[in-house]
Amino acid sequence: MIRLFVSASILVVSSLLFVAFSSSRSLSIHLIQENGRPLAVGKQEVRERVWREPSTHKLFDVDSTTTDLFGPFIARIGSQGTLYLVDLGDLKIKAFDSRGQLVQVFGEGKGQGPNEFGWITDIDITDSGELWVADQVNGRVAVYASDGSLQEHIVLDQAPYRLSVFESGQFILMDILQASGMFSVWQGDGAKVTTFGRLVDGTAGESLALDGSMVRAGASGIVFAPRYAGLLMKFARDGSREFAVETIEPLPVPRLRKDGERIWVDFAAPLSTISLSAVGQEIFALSVIESGFKKLGVLDVYDLGTGSYKFSQRVPEPCSRVFVSEDRVVTIKDASVSVWQRES
Image (spheres, rainbow, N blue to C red):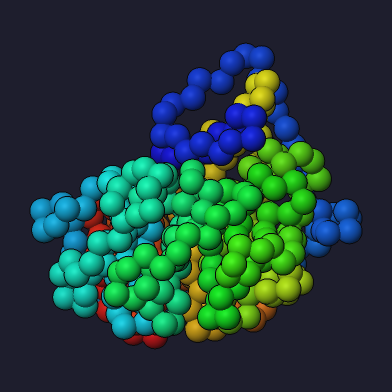
């Protein structure tokens, strides 16, 4: 299981088991609005899941037996149906056509060179086919043209974590370690426009409790969902909050553990939203439910305009992450990726 730790001001992704020292203490996290008052979170009118059968059929699989795929972690579908996969195994982005054939590779692996990445934490695809890559370790965003050529590096004064790009060239970054706000709006030349989303009444490290997913909501803004707290939020591009609602299973904000300068989310905290997609007028949030002795993946669907819960669907097959587009569902499990035709 991947857990996030903060030591000093550096965010580290670790899959190692961390043994908590007896000197560690527990921290309670309180959500606030921009004015410092407690965050008002709307409740869902529906309190139990409403099930709807998914209409999908498998198109193809991509794994290590068919191509050089080692650690797929993030998937995006381009406007032409191209599948883009972030492979953390060799730190490259790999593009596949509608038949599952590898057609393009972006990047040359780990490093600090022009076509190398320190660590990829997110990607976004514009309607014109540009690929934008958040390189957290090198502190920059790489922009590739649709033909695969590197156009530019946008060097930043903070580490990019989550990334959403708009056709105007503006982009929004999510960085959970920024005390002034988790989200920031940037121009294409790397100039910061504004910061928003100060949601935690505490130090920057304590916002680790809200680590999660951010995705672009069309041309209007972003949707955010924490990994451990049952919360769904939408912001306009100017930073104004459009809604903050509970998810269908409203888990509390997790407690943090602290030992000296090291802070981490309590290991006992259950997962809320594992991956997130915004398609058309709907939000798709992957969560987990228990069925007997099994844990099953579920796609909970919400209205993009209001955050209201609509229905739930079981995922097509067991997986750890799901990404949804207008006509595709992508499931990832270990080093295997499956692409499904989706009927809306």
